[in-house]
Amino acid sequence: MKIHALQTGTVRVKDRFLHPSPGRRRQLDLLLPGAWSEPLPIHCWAIEHGGTLLLIDTGETATARDVPFARFDVTVEQELPGALARAGLSLADVSEVVLTHHHGDHVDGVVHVSAPVRVNDVELQFAGTAASRVTRGLLRQPLPRGFAPEPLVLDDGPFGAFSRSRALSDDGRILAVATPGHTPGHISVICIDDEGRHVMLAGDVSDTLEQLHARRADAVGPDPAVHVATLETILAHCTEHATVYLPSHDPGSAARLRESTIVNQPPERTPMHAVVVNLTITDPRAAGRALHEQLVPRVSQAPGFVTGYWTAKGNTALSMSMFETEEAANRMREQAAAGVPAGVVLDGIEVREVVAHA
Figure (tube, rainbow, N blue to C red):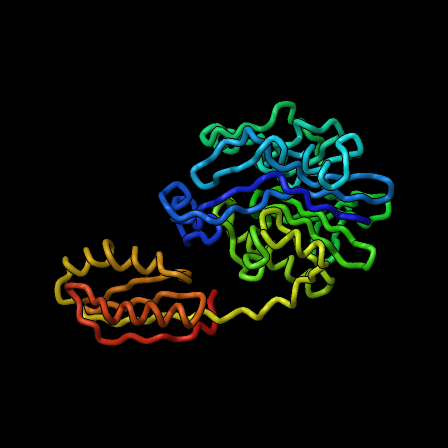
């Protein structure tokens, strides 16, 4: 078995795409001004195995339109035919295409392909919903002409940590597994290489290996809880099987493929920490304005913020803001102590470890 990383140009995304805000701002921030990432690769993959050439995704084309959170840089020479040629391969040799999901930078290259194309049946249904059609229209991201993939049903039962799978090769060494989150029907493809390693072509299940270890949902998936559960499933699989993890936009994926770099044992979760603040309210009106106009926006946008609660009883107030790490909580404690707003008196502030939550 031989796996080729095919790069079809690059894309720059908003920093808030890679590190989304919590809560309601998760998707809103994608539409607002913000900093941009360095160029990230747009990878698709070619698998030579058993006398066949299987493509996983087809990459982007030079006609790609920018969207508020992504800027594409693709030349005609970088499209799928050129990417295959640089790997010593040809479109004429392609036996089949399997798509991880239906977003343009993974499917637009199907315009070059005459071989059969398949996508998860759940993803195909999602792409046809009114919400998906409206979103594509607003972003000016139509599906490529002639886009008519066949449904791929994951009906082969569990594989490793994954609840649903489907063999893509006669010997079962290439499989599709369900990895919902980025989209409801997203799949990844696992190739069992000649040394028994599991090479996971992960599409957009995460943008980077770092995001996988952080168990961080992305900014566009419809249900962050589903996304985090999938990341947990992948990490569980990695503990049982030597896995080379290759997201499509990770700048390190091509090198990890070349070097067969295994995902390390995932680190233990760092316990969350809470900033607990006790206040006396001296001016309810001024305190209310400060809460909604200053405190809540400042705390909710702080690095590492998870969730927060602000409570009041009579002329006293108590708030508890949770952060991913003790370091992030201590930074917020220092900021809060140095910036007490009008209308309140600070009675106490401390950082505590979160030992349980429901």
